[in-house]
Image (tube, rainbow, N blue to C red):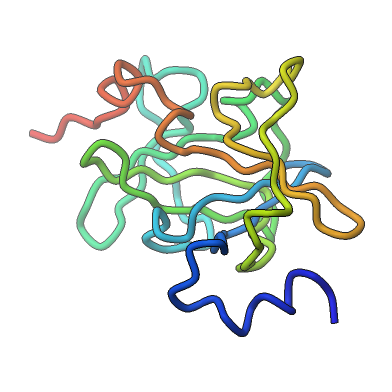
Length: 165
């Protein structure tokens, strides 16, 4: 039995476990707190918004609600790629606003012990150390844990709010 599944049985009510949604951007695997995730959807038609920040792909109509879509690749300064059947939108609420994060693929829901995580190295560069809360060491792979609240600054969160008349 591996380290992840051995802890899955006692996940309920255990403060020493992290429950995460994992997703991929390129070859890298990231995780976010499952309690922050409202839903995960296939990509639908995204409407471009004039003068939006470069990391905002546009907006979608999600059951009558206009939701801005953040391209995580663009936000992290990575090259954009063509969307495919694995591309997903992770819908979360940030600062009272519903936002969708466009990712290459959603992998799985994980329950990992806090003991297999450690703070990110001081020399983390590239995707922005501000977003990274920890790095999880899982058998053959590393999982970068993100704080979605910090992926967008407060001013950026305000900038992406669509205006509907």
